[in-house]
Length: 441
Ligand code: NDP
Image (cartoon, rainbow, N blue to C red):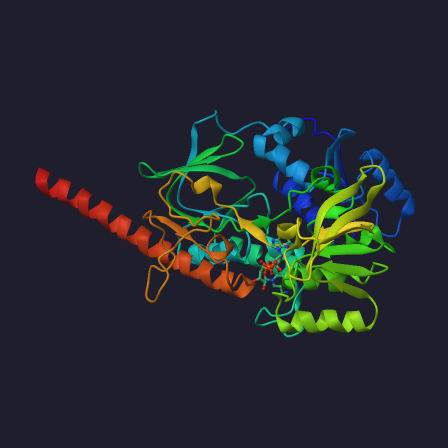
């Protein structure tokens, strides 16, 4: 590459999406300047001004042009436009197969990376596609306290980076990009990327995880990144001193609410029913904060609208409440109480949707929500889908446990199942070659 454009990235401390942006440019061999806005009000104001009022890091600029945050940058990368802006030439023509691999792994969360470690050790030289959430959900977690082997806990991004290093040591190749489709009507599988690149593979492990859900309420699209967020660890610090609202009643909501007490005036949790889904450990921690006056819980309450502007951020929200629970299902009930509530930031923590669209049309069976159905049960082949050669691991399959350690377990199983499949395939191919030779003799 001759002239590299000037890449600037505004970052802050404890910012997983900043790390993802940097990793993306690192993977492309592109140099960049970073400006850390943490504790530097002047720099922060400069970022907000250059980013047209957005108060979220990272903010990426190429030759002074605002690219935006991680979502915008990765969306541009998906289509190949980012490479164009960076002057990186495409490796192949559209539709041309760049390379054949024994095994492609979709996803670099805990499941994908564990599969990559095992597959690398099994000499299957996996190509691991990062997907639109490189490193997966754990990169958004500050402290992982329940991953075995780390009695002091370990940071999510650190755990993921360690696993990436371990996977590379065993011969896995990690590549940025998003799989658009897997074509399974003939073998090998044809794996097409959103930027037009094409690979073929004898086997595919789907470990592409799940993405944060949103509510689909008015104000949401406009305010996402401007006071509305699905990642407290990423954006909480930007709303220091404000009242903050966390929506949800699972572990993520409890963890985020607890984390946000570091910055917020008061953290409010709005949950749609009486009982929390979260495990007792998290509920207890939240109750401690309630006693300390840092968190207030609003049960049987849902958000129906977000109000504010991109310039000023979130101003207030409309909430509905009904003691019977699920108030948005009871809007006509006279006991449903609608009210406006002032907050400076809103965090959705309402679960995830599996990233499995790229497998539609392959014949892989999914449930109504898009979770892959795998064989399960005891014995070998637990991660097999209905399509021989396609395996599933982690949050794309598991809607119940969804733990880092269970994802790791499934990742290792998928790599072992894929290895057995690839060996069978090799044996079948060499046997049929042998038969041809014998027939010639
Ligand atoms: P969950 O699915 O466990 O919880 C989602 C929460 O959001 C539920 O309380 C649900 O309500 C609520 N919700 C869902 N949809 C809506 C909606 N449309 N409107 C209002 N509320 C809604 O997801 P999490 O992300 O919390 O957790 C996923 C997995 O990750 C779990 O297995 C969890 O244990 C794990 N995790 C573990 C952590 C840890 O231990 N450190 C931290 C974070 C996650 P309802 O309860 O009524 O269904």
